[in-house]
Length: 134
Ligand code: ZN
Image (tube, rainbow, N blue to C red; front, side):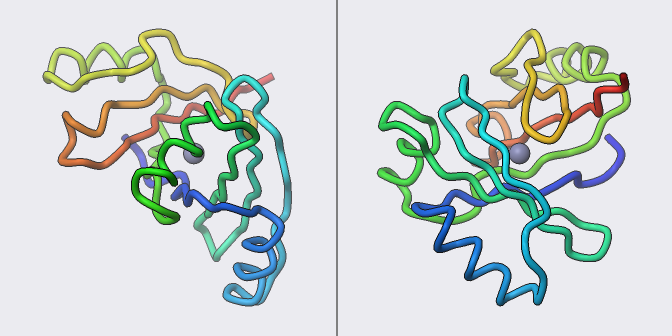
């Protein structure tokens, strides 16, 4: 793994939280993107070299809706940048981690992504991200 790609924060209202985090960082979000298949609306902020992703559910079955119902708003996942996501999935499975997406899927911000079950990583939901090069 290379570096933290972004930190994902589950929010109830993207509109309210975009406003809140703009005040926090002193700069507005640079993009909003819906990931329809996942039932989420996302927005991204740059903080120096780092990125923060806000996630809002678009329906009640969305993983973000379930997360907020259970735990409330807050840090949802930490995403790590990887060069070869398929090799990394293989490696982590051998290491005993529970991979939720055996085949990487298209995530927000032009990435291939796969998640690890938080039960196999001390309660932390981990996202692997590989930049899609076109
Ligand atoms: Zn993410």
